[in-house]
Length: 108
Image 1 (tube, rainbow, N blue to C red):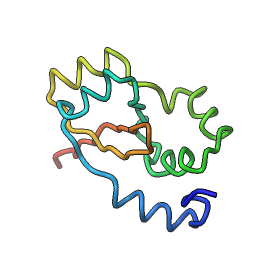
Image 2: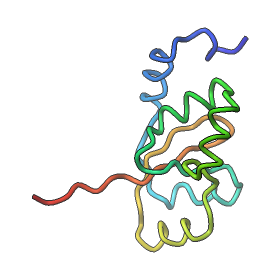
Image 3: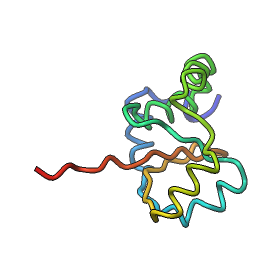
Image 4: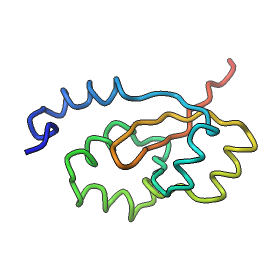
């Protein structure tokens, strides 16, 4: 039994929230080169995805992958993030790293 199985989803969410950080793309490029980055689409909670991956819930993850809501980071993403010096939300679910574009606040 792993540590994740001993925690409730809420306890796991709190733990993973503490592991979430905002990182510049420059710090993530080496992980992209290793093929361990997964992009989480806006509108989907990155922590929900992290919990599903931690729990090894293959059915939920497969649905998101099939729907394109979670996908491996592609070269086009990497180019845009490099050119714009993007900062991304990240959370590690070893051996993978989930990334999500940061929502821009609209000026009112």
